[in-house]
Length: 176
Image 1 (cartoon, rainbow, N blue to C red):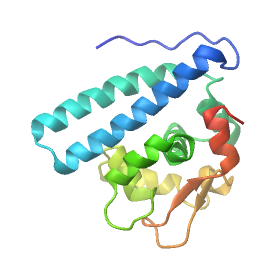
Image 2: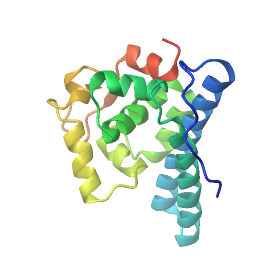
Image 3: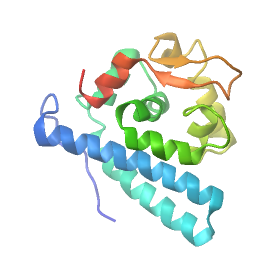
């Protein structure tokens, strides 16, 4: 696996750099979907390969953990934890990239919302501790929800729908 290091800070992302940021984010999120599907339907070999790919894409996307990356900029303004920043990206993703919406549909069962806490747990391959952290970050008093960045639909959590405020999704995609 390649050794990825953060890219140097150069101000707001533009041009090729912005395209690469969006591509790296989308590939990582798609790989979380692939891992979720493999975990649900695959054998040990398929799960191991999906996990290896997800880790590789996660490492590549981690290069964008710099102040001017759109998701990091929004997270800093809202005072989000690293986990809340990740959740916001996963929640906003289907609003930013239609391909992600299709991938999410393949990860949910029945008539559940496109994005809910259960899906987030599945995408993050969460154990009970991480699922508890996800629930905490989506509490109505936590910055992610209290700020209005994430909207929780009707229903009982963890089954209630989750969506990013449109202005937040646009900022994450850098289309403001």
